[in-house]
Image (cartoon, rainbow, N blue to C red; front, side, top):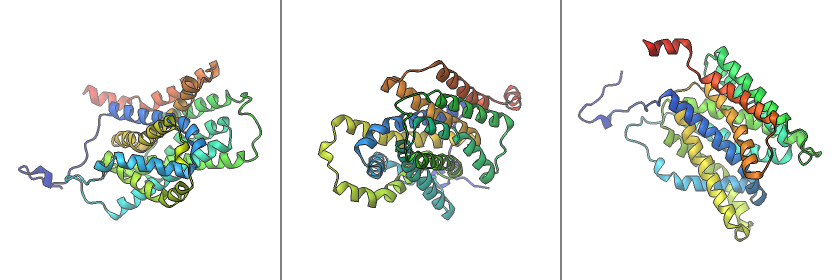
Length: 322
């Protein structure tokens, strides 16, 4: 039992406030939509910067924007050894490895393969949540996961006839393997994040895992920066890099951690279906790709999965009515 000092409540560690379920859903959805957007828009950046240098610049810019988030709040309890270990794993798997595997994988394989493989993220999150968090995954959430996988699968296979992307690629198997690794990195990010939100606030988690990401990429980033011609980078590319860094390091992580405070990890994982959906929409709106009837059907099925997994249960409705 925690005793509070009414005259000076700042002396007593407080449990971070929990957002309403509807607000949490909105945060999770917006987070994954931003992830999908910057994944799509990172392609021109990867064509200019080496992958590791791009990651280092991302963490550096994000770190400068979040310096004031690193300070420990007065009402936050001291971090345990387990919390520190989880912070490192969250950054190593969800930031460092996910970034390298995702960008490198997309460069080596086709968009069709990438979409199909990334559609497995919700199922991977549910599986890891059941295995490590001992969360009970209701049948309705599993049905939502199935809809998400089917929807993105339809979306991916609808692109199979694209002659530009259908060319033979000798290293496609390696790209597919890297994307599969990215799937489990993203799933681990969701599961570990759920554990962290029980003891730390979303802003502090965001700043700390970004700091670890910067440290992990520092030696490789510095080495590549010494031989890179930064003067040849156009102004528009720097603007895109700024958006990428702030979205990837700051906005999406804070939104995701905020949503995870009141939503089970397995249920939150269904929202990762919006990642490939938003990436496809960016391709349509920004890159001029055409949206077919099959793709529209895929969107509807995938979004039905999100709705199925997030609608309140009958028991919850009865509690509200009472």
